[in-house]
Image (cartoon, rainbow, N blue to C red):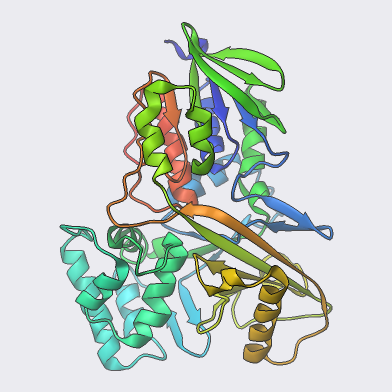
Length: 439
């Protein structure tokens, strides 16, 4: 079918759906994006609290997430006098009072080897054990003959307690949003391969200076509209039915026909969406078998300056995993964001009790604090799938002609990250365009 005759419906305006929309619009294909929420971004979107733009989940990017970074640059207007939307930091792993690892400006893999050798807080035995593990994994091209858990992998390579508790496990939980005793070692190694083991920039940390909707989905919508496409927010799809001409979609009381459909809904909504399409029963089984992990964000707004040692500071031994200095990142004075990845004892606390616990941990580490003006906890209970070893994930191309799946839960070398979501959307778009995409 010539591109001029294609009209693609994209159901879901998160990072996956908008990546597909931008890629198709770039090549002249008509697209209509349906998003049930009034705000684009899905599980990585803006929320406003007391007039302050925040995110429903605190996310960071790494330099290895090249497709996400490429699309952000593609859709973002860049006035000469405006700061870039992302704060880029060379790898500076700071676990307060436990471990400090900084990568120097050297080519890979020397930057990582030097960082491990000079890590503060670990003895020589632990440093050499970490280097031996990375060298062995590099020789194996970061491939395991059989998947196992991250905890088992670290035991196999005899990692010491400091690096285990303050580098590898926090890195695993941050990247896979799954406890190390449940997390896939192969997915973890894929992240290590493309970040710590890749070129120097691959290990950089990138933190959004703007909210996550403004970072990509909203400028992506402007990009699509400027090329003749539609992005409909607050518009829920209530039915999709295969017909001779393609697919009929009902939304907002109106039925329209499309040549192709990209389902870019979160996985816990996919099964209900596909219930009327019997040809996709195998996909439904895989999606229904997924288990989920939460991400909890705690925001503390103080009446005065609160500055951390680094824009992103790690904590160990309490409930908070990472603290974000929002003043240093995006000029939000007196605001601290804390993220708690994956499941844990914190889920047994009420939201007020959890915020008070994070407040107490902040004070115990960094001393007296100004008066607290307000606090807010945002819990995404099904933020990601649980990245277990050997997990089956559906392909983007389905057995139903011209029906595609996009989302971080679909087949990927990465866990449920923004990069996995973006790559899935690009793969769908390239498939519709009749192009191969090795992502």
